[in-house]
Image 1 (tube, rainbow over the protein chains, first blue to last red):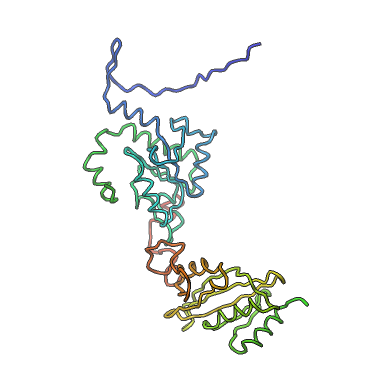
Image 2 (cartoon, rainbow over the protein chains, first blue to last red; image 1 turned 60 degrees about the horizontal axis):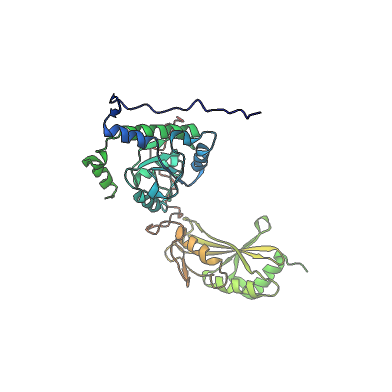
Length: 187
Length: 168
């Protein structure tokens, strides 16, 4: 008896960007195609220092499955990744290391601060703890919570996908972006 | 005969006499205050003496008493006699203006990092320590954060109130 075969019929495809198509061709703007490709193949770099990292592990795992959004593989080298996920308390002694990791990532790069500690220092209003990672690197999305549930982290990643999808190709060479980088002392 | 607190106290008093003060036994843990210049001599005696044999340093830490004039900073040594399973606590008081204590790192290697930590947080200057630099805090830190004049949290900050975290 042949083994019953089940096909996954619930596969979702992203929508085609608006464009002009005819027989054998399709044209749209480069911005939209690149945005679409980037948003749906983000490479996450987890920078997990404490309990938010545990929630992030659940997010990566099969129950919540971050892979559904095209971020299947964690990269554990900053040089391959474009989405830095800072999950946990960053001590002041860790700050230069976090900054180094950020600097090693190639443009375009995005940062999500997961949890109260990465966003603001959280309950650790104290001399050894960095009061929010945005003191050393620019942050795109903040996920509140102590720690946030995996749904929260997924929501943050969806928000980031939205940002990536709609980002102009000129943004990274704009004066505003250069000014932002300069305010962090990054060339 | 098992080693008891009374025997330890007797042997120490025989050797050092009136220089050891502040004898107490909270929860059965013999505690004594040692003058700062004698701390190594006392520990060496406790280490070498065939009856006492305190050859393990469990812990070394500092305390800040801002109200005790002339003896604001305190170094606490926890010693352990592994053979008779008896513990002993030594206290050394130094003034905050001149917090000099002789290092115990020649006697106990474990004291090396513990003294660096105590220096890091309380600024106690361990004379003769091989590498007295900060161990836990950032190297650029220019104060000793566990001293009582530095508040744990800044009470004037508003951005840490409950309402900022959705708990208001």
